Image (cartoon, rainbow, N blue to C red):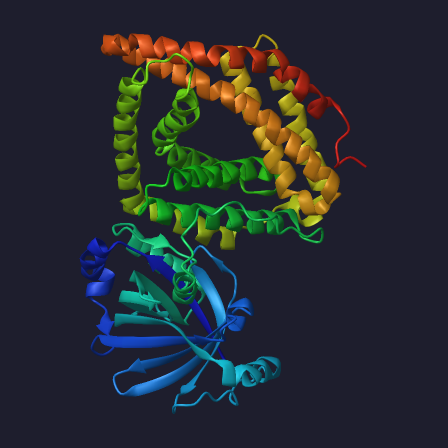
Length: 501
């Protein structure tokens, strides 16, 4: 058995030439001519191997055939380390060389039911790079297609495979390349994409995963595990948002960035101060690059759309507003997509992934019990939210917005620490926090929309009537929410909490 340690990077096909021209690549040794690789992946009709997180393939390279078995392993920031067994393929599967007895027995039992599921065909050029003495890394550039059931999807990616050195050397090289080439870390293997294509499962936005915490972890280890989950959500949605118009990708990208910023604040006592300061600013700036597109998506879907069937409203009354907002949204989407295509975006992801592996904990990290740390930090978040609640008693929009941010941070903290406390009680508390946050979110969305439309009518008098109609239509609901919002939130901030002993 060998262990394959690699860093997978996605890039647009238009960036291939720039990558090949990069001084580190242009001056590297090519390991032979480019090869066309044809890989066929096998599984049972019930996709048993997929469910077992095992990939079995045959590969044809020129006149040579190889059989490969890989087991899945967690991937973070595009980096993965997977056990792998490779041997010549003579026309029949042979699992005798697999030194994992349980896996070999499992594959042997399934051998007669194995059938081709999908195929990958791509052209690969391999380079040998030695960025520092004693380090050897192979760079593979793959371009081609994944084919399954008459459907096809493009492949354009770079893989950095470690030959000698450590994982930090992979990240170091990737960051050097990403400084001038738009490379984005990717946790999606070709096998994962092939299975999705085989099942004709549409690509979907990636949401925050369940908290992976264990009470025995140190605060630093807990932070690292949670940050990697947020990073996975960020990079998966950023990659999809660069290729698709579904606004939920941008929304979930920004959710991942908000969660990361909340995580930095939550674990700040156990983290280096410079790290917290650097990434708080960087993540805020990254989220801001996509804020306008999100605002206009919300304006169209949550503010304009509900009015469509208003009684007695002329059917075309809001057409001018909708058209104007759509134009601004499309411009904002184009600007956001340009930011995603800029090398700086992928470089931020790679830099964060590299720094997460290198973080050192201080005295607090060595001495702190994670559950006690969680109680302390959740208490601090609740205290901060109480102050914002008091400031919002006059219901000023900016104070209600600050209260919403405070509730959101408290909810994120409760979600992060959920495995440490009574799951059922904490789940109810999180649901109530979300409901309060959503009501405050509606008020904030209407306030942003109001500011937009009143500004637009100054430049375009034809928008005056629809602007006032829109504001007036939402006014009664806003009034109802404002009357009850603090009454609903108060028990969440002063009542019993699931994390107190």
